[in-house]
Image 1 (tube, rainbow, N blue to C red):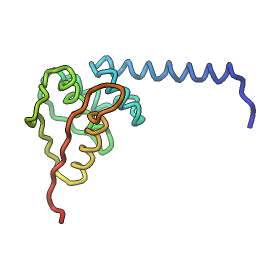
Image 2 (cartoon, rainbow, N blue to C red; image 1 turned 90 degrees about the vertical axis):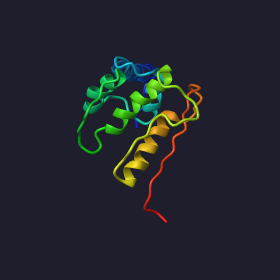
Image 3 (spheres, rainbow, N blue to C red; image 1 turned 90 degrees about the horizontal axis):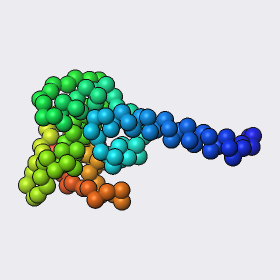
Image 4 (cartoon, rainbow, N blue to C red; image 1 turned 45 degrees about the vertical axis):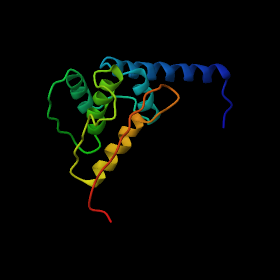
Length: 141
């Protein structure tokens, strides 16, 4: 293994930071909050997928949409991010009443949606934002 110069390492770190900042600007163009971006980055999600780029802004602007995309294309975050941002902006009020109900056709999608929502909603040190997420599904003992 070759020994690297400190300047080379610092330069590489700076280049990576610039790259991440450029990517994060893509999220910011869609009115996604800094803390949501950080939470996504912590899950190694640094860029929008096509379905997210096409749906997040219309959903933030209260438009109804129908989207279709392949498995693994980011559909869950495409609808979760606008919901979370509406809570953060105060457009959706937080109280003890249910505000959002998401229906999924399979237990696996319920679990996936729950896990993804918790990435965006669980309390963390970066902000004071958290929401209660509850998953309900049948067909189990």
